[in-house]
Structure formats: structure tokens, C-alpha cells
Amino acid sequence: MTDKTTAAAQRSQYIRNRVILALLLLAGHNLLFRLEDIFRPHYEADGHPGRQPRERLVEITRILLAGRSNLRVRICFDAPQHETVAVCPNLEIEYSGGQGEHRADERIGAHVAWRRPEELDQKWYVVTDDRAVRRETLKNGARYVPANLFAVLLSDFQCLAKTTAAV
Image (cartoon, rainbow, N blue to C red; front, side, top):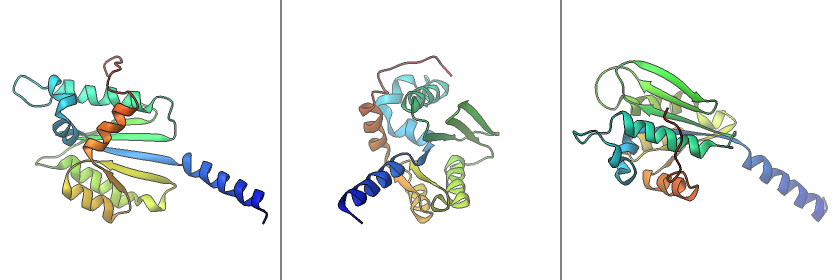
């Protein structure tokens, strides 16, 4: 192989790696609590994140996804009824269903364990600060992204200053 052929093969591999599909699984309520500087202004009067902070997270995520067809996001929230809502082609909201605590965390763990990211042709990233979810994520071949790092990404891509129509 010549140097030019080797360089071309390396560029080709780099391009293939750059366009590989990626999935972000967001622990919705974890982010609403951990990123208070972004979401607290939208909290309910009783001091808890309700509908408005959830809508703000969806709005910010939609902005992040604009023009990025190789990136999919699923935001997982605790809720009494299980439901998955497609917001746009590459953004879904999943409501956990069931009763008790950490239901959305359990859904994220089940997604990562059941689908095994290394068996799929995509990279999986779980955005959370929950230690149990991070352990499950790493155990099953996905990567975790701390909430503060996700906030830096949102800021760098100028997602926080923009606004769009409500969901």
C-alpha cells in the first residue's frame, strides 16, 4: 500500500466514524434537577419541575438536533402511564409507566441492557448523574455523559439562548 492509499483509507475510516448513528438517552428528571441554572426559572410554584421545565428540555433538545440526522434522542421521564411520543423524526419522549421511584432510570437501564449498543451500528450515550444508571450504562457497553458536560455541549451549540414553539 502506498502512502497516498493509506492516507485515503484513513480519511475514509474517519468519515465513516463521523457519520455513525448515535443515540442519546436523557434521564429527564435527573437533568431538570441537576441543571437548575437552566430549568429552575421554569419550576412550578411548589419548587418542583413540572410541565414547563420538561417542555424547555424538549425545546433545547430539538434545537440541538436541528440538521443532525445521524443523532437520535430519547428523553425518559417518570410517569404513571407508559407512553412513547415522537416529537420529530429523531426525538422521542418516553414516559416510564408504573409506580415507585427511579422508573425512568430503570427504563434507561433496560434499553441499554436489552439492545446492547456494541451489537448495533451506533454509539449510545446516557446523560445522567445517577450513579446506578452510570454503572448499568458502562456495564452494557454504552457511555455516560455527566449532566454538567451535557450543559456545556448545549451552550457550545448555542441551544440555550434560542427559543422555538412549545411542544
